[in-house]
Amino acid sequence: MRTSPLLGSAGTALVIAHPGHELRVHGWLEHARPTVFVLTDGSGSRGQPRVTSTSRVLETVGASRGDLYGAVSDRELYAAILSGGTEWLSAMATSLCDSLIRRDIRVVAGDALEGFNPAHDLCRHLIDAVVHRCQRVGHLVENFAFALDAPPGTADHDLPSGRFV
Image (cartoon, rainbow, N blue to C red):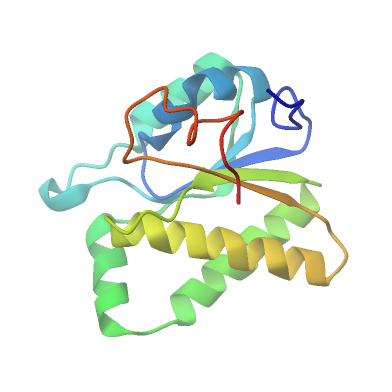
């Protein structure tokens, strides 16, 4: 295993599409104590937000909530995707980029592009765009991904020893 800036690194962020994704990298979460950004409230088709459970996990491990945290319901996110409008996504990217720079975040980990859930894939594209935007203004950020649709413990996908973006 290579030495990774993901372990115990100051200036680390986790960006995920839905509450609960942090559980996929819980061990890393305990070590890195990142600032966590969550795109949706995780309400799904039932309309019951799940951000409270994620907030409890973050509190337990000593991680903090980012400025973008349960910003939209799942229904709102999917409706926005279907409408084809991009203003909301651009505003989200600007907010996230500003947060990374303001907090001096230099390492970002988040959902991988896997092709099975549009919100997860949108999250990955958002992360990639934000990291690129930060780098264009001279704020260098390392960009890592972890799979959600693979068996736990799959070395090719889990932090910190897997394949990274």
